[in-house]
Length: 137
Image 1 (tube, rainbow, N blue to C red):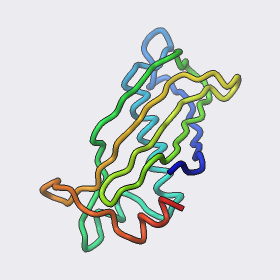
Image 2 (image 1 turned 90 degrees about the vertical axis):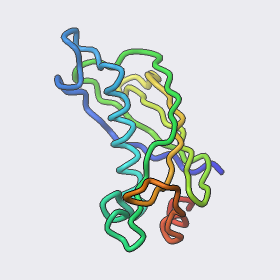
Image 3 (image 1 turned 60 degrees about the vertical axis):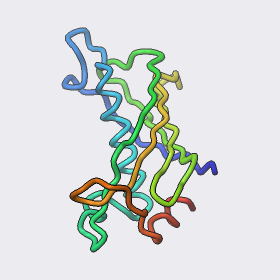
Image 4 (image 1 turned 90 degrees about the horizontal axis):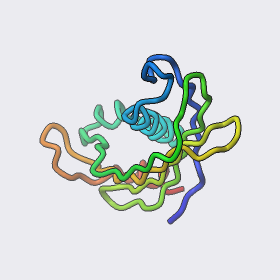
């Protein structure tokens, strides 16, 4: 399963960088997370809505493989992208990329496995059917 690519723009602010104006490696993880959250919202869901349902579930990152290819710098406008590769009953696999918008340079790639878990015990749980359908569409 390969879905349409979702893109979320992110500007690099001073708080995202080290003293040399380069984004610290952990900053990319925040950018990836924001993109996944906005993708979920664009598909009609949100973490807070999931947590508030009778099911009491949330998405949690299970694993992530990241490659850093080139630095993002202060004031860069980035396109953080997501493409759903697989949707299972209780997990998703997303391919993500960060591209500098001004020249299309690929800065980072990530493959992320996200698990749906029950709160508060964090045991695996089924993704609500209506949400699973909208994520896979």
